[in-house]
Length: 99
Image 1 (cartoon, rainbow, N blue to C red):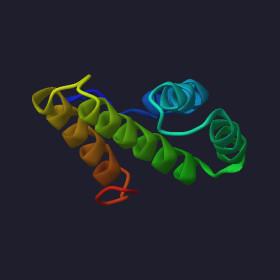
Image 2 (image 1 turned 90 degrees about the vertical axis):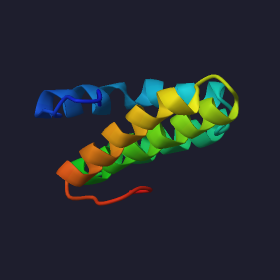
Image 3 (image 1 turned 120 degrees about the vertical axis):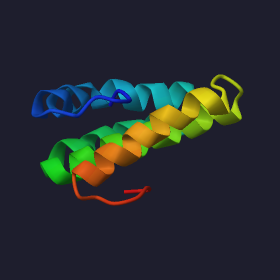
Image 4 (image 1 turned 90 degrees about the horizontal axis):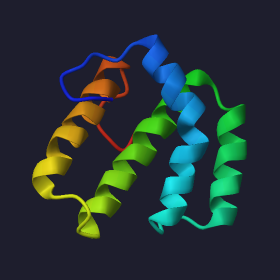
């Protein structure tokens, strides 16, 4: 979510709805192939809400890592995003990454 903002059910609904697009970003970043992305989206649609929320957090974490490694995001910019993801995970009772 956004640093400093509590997540709401509407936020999660939006993130879950946008997950296929998030996965496509992972293809662009080279985190997964298109075939892997297609399989992930199909599996995701069958998951429970709890597993969907975990998948959203996990994939966003992987993207931040990829952006930082590729020099597209600084460590300073990545840190608050990671903190917000950890906070969301904690708020949902998931604990620490990798969810």
